[in-house]
Length: 240
Ligand code: CAA
Image 1 (tube, rainbow, N blue to C red):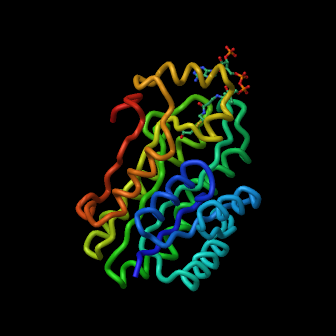
Image 2: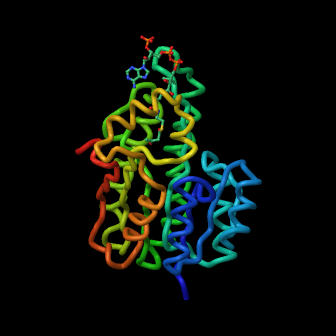
Image 3: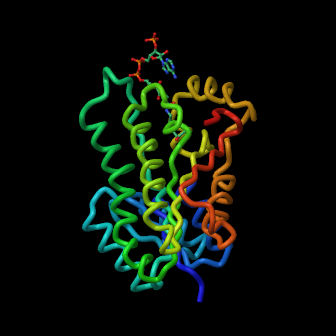
């Protein structure tokens, strides 16, 4: 029987590429989305991957949603915590609401996604947790105090979970994408985006598939001894 993978924010952008790559690698994939019904329906039409709608910021919805995925597909073996938002503003203009929305979705959302599947993974002695962090969690970013805090927090989550899960056959790793050609990056004002691309030694934005291939590797049996690590995929823009 094929392994089951859950990808949050899995119907658009990097998440859609991850869902497709895992399906191609033989997983039964469930992709979640928060609000864009049209994009989710189109994604399912094109890929045959079932989508589930819930707000990762809400624990009870996440738990119930994960329950439906497991009823449909079986126990979840691979969790890709990818869902994330930006509410960029220079700190002196950032509102408490902008701070809270990003923390609730990007950081608490990771807890809400992993916590309900963790006991089952421990019992079955197998699990793969992959959290999509960001270059901006490693280096910080002008106008992203909120986002950078969550993405740095992701690294603390995987390093801690790696230690807790290692003896139960569970690995937890993070990927830090650099600037990837998605709606999120395209929403940055054009002039700012051009200046960002000028700082990438590769001379281009990354492609969603370049992140999806990292995920497929970390999910595989070949990556069993890689645990608590951070993979940077950023075209040489930043080294840790
Ligand atoms: N570094 C230094 N200064 C910067 C800057 C930067 N990266 N970006 C903007 N500034 C400066 C501007 O030049 C301007 O300075 P002046 O006032 O001296 O002209 C000032 O900061 C901006 O002030 P504004 O009052 O105009 O700012 P604003 O309230 O209109 O906000 C902004 C504009 C939201 C900061 C906008 O510039 C923006 O979106 N910047 C991009 C931020 C960014 O890189 N986000 C990453 C998104 S992609 C992502 O997050 C995915 C991932 O994981 C990589």
